[in-house]
Image 1 (cartoon, one colour):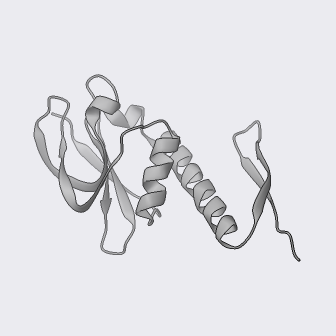
Image 2 (cartoon, helix red, strand yellow):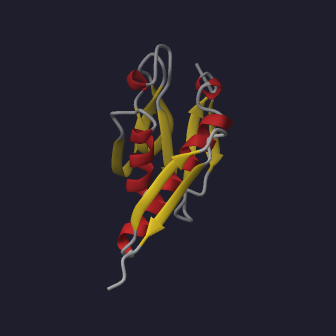
Length: 136
């Protein structure tokens, strides 16, 4: 039975979190208004709950559910099993935060009348957006 670790994040927008997870390759992301139980690698119901969930069958053999639970301050905390931390640890969390930030920036730009002129990924993984706005 794996132990689940909780990792605080600065993620606050549910739709953007789900979109970022999809962008990272998870085709099935569950979003719930109320927290749902997470499951272990054998399908056993665990006491941990989350509102945003990627179920274990979408993560790989012997994986547990990956969850994001809403905290009282409105941010999400990632719930990752000890087994899955090797794959979904600090480096993966940085990718998730970067993808979330990118999607947030694109949405903000579109809401404020900007268009994406260029979208480049640098060799070290940094993403550079150039925005433009046509003024009439």
